[in-house]
Image (cartoon, rainbow, N blue to C red):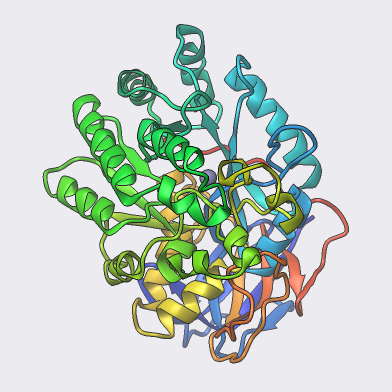
Length: 455
Ligand SMILES: [Zn+2]
């Protein structure tokens, strides 16, 4: 579809500034930004933003849409999750392609793309999970990087399923770095978590509220130490995903002072929710089952206090939503599917609890939700800023809207029952209006696979 229009009278927000401007869109791209006042004649097709904020489309760098979890169980579909994303002003997500045991990385990517291409309303990229580091698997990596998949997920957690030893992680980091990619790490000590889980279950402590005791802060901190050590040894840039502890962030801030390229991703739930949820009723406890778990308020307060630290490169969600009825599955806490919602809530949560409270500026908000993830995922050549030549992924946002309830709340959300500040009014994806007046304005799947650059 060819489009050519102008959004006028907007306050254009990028990571490095807020300017009153008119924005010209041609075809799928941003053609020009005209700071006001100017004397240019605008095209006939005009959207009057009337002092509202215009943001680059949000990028959630960490989601699990339609993730199979054995049997018929899978997280909320690509279709429904991507619809929630668009409602919340997120136009691009990066999901994780997870190979089955013995499956090639390429086959895992093909399987994920099959679901995403059929159902996704937003643009998407894929990280590739590497659960084994055999020569055969490692040989696949250069080709994947060249094909627009430069980020590889490794686990030091989940013994007997996904866990790599430090030696295997070093092999992966060497190969990925040599191919121009980066490694993203789930930093928990799988041996420690497995031992604690076994102990709790042997003691009869099987109820869901024991979940956090099997995932202590020390487990995250020691795995982050291992990751930093290997990043130093191999030179491979490392992103620690869903960082949740004060001790873990401190390690990263310190390592960066000595020149190690280690970056932190934090998810909204670890910033603004805490372990009180595990003292609630059963539904609340199950809603909060995720790994890493929600932490004591001293951790979340520390993370919030450091939100302006450049070591935090993106705010994501780890969106992996299950019906509450599915979260009761399993005979003990270790069998409960992990994850929660967030992709639709992220921008508004961070606006309400970050921008409106003065914790961060609107520019830093845009950086954490769009520009930072674009850079860290290798999407900056197309997305993450309002700049000429980039995709016209745009969000018209009313920061003054008060008392807002979210239109896409799931039954098992950490974010229900809160009056939010700010409302997403209109969303364009590659120049096409995809959300208007709170309604998805699409009659077809729109999202496309986006090839990413070296990150
Ligand atoms: Zn995840």
